[in-house]
Image 1 (tube, protein in one colour):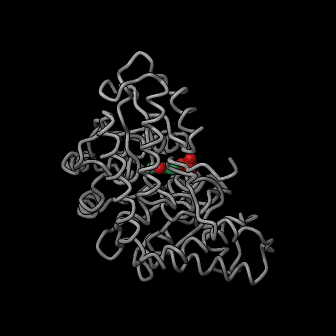
Image 2: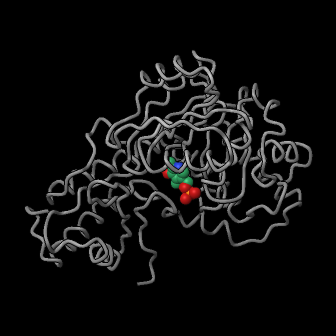
Image 3: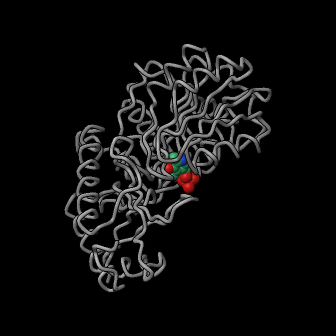
Length: 370
Ligand SMILES: *Cc1c(COP(=O)(O)O)cnc(C)c1O
């Protein structure tokens, strides 16, 4: 089979041919042609959140986690105290990297099948004045839960605390408006809902806190303030940029705008999610989350309760039919995940459901027993 398999994962994602073709040229990292592409990407990303007045956009080489780590290093003073609202695997990762960078960290744990609670946050901030920053994962990709960004931001603003948002898997799909939601930093990446290829992250930093970020970072490579200052002065990235990733992202943003921006992307992913859940239910496969907590980004399904089920076999059989599924990330129950994001529509989702139906049949798992 020479057609690429469809990636039903939370990144890397299936990309369009236009995006792939954008990578067929070489670019000089300090050349004005490339600097123009970088400047255009930065400006158009700010447009997506209506953040031209309130925020700056700082790109960073590396996968999304590099930008989360850089945001904590840059935003939080070395004697700062970070509160992580934890309802899943990516929250735990944020807590771990914060601790490894030597910042004091407190974690409040929540169940992984429901959103974090702004009320509990409110009480915690009232009880501990030493907390300087709150970390929220907008869409917890572990189970697929959408967390209440606007409500959490309002609580942080009322208490005068900084908010750092990992919006990696939601940015571009779920609405985020910097004019109505206050955050100090919001992080996303090239290879998620913008449908670029992986290799760079980017962080929106609130202009009002930018100056106070100077000198916070204990890491040279992770210093977003230094990256920002250098980029403003020269138009260039501080160290070697991922040139092909940047031009692919530029092309992906053009297609994002052509499609109708965030509302259109949300509508397409919502349709994908509905096709997926309806189709899987008909096969007896039940989603792990209640519908009201489910973001249309990635869906966790209970694994079939049948002795013949084995994730590796299930995965290989679905792959042979052209679809790449994703393992579950929950500690308590056996699950698998299916992404709704990427350059795919309901037709591809229906084909994926058909491939799963075929796969279950091959494994000898009757639909009713799934
Ligand atoms: C994808 C993702 C990240 C970044 O993961 P990388 O593997 O470093 O790209 C971080 N947070 C969330 C919520 C994500 O979905």
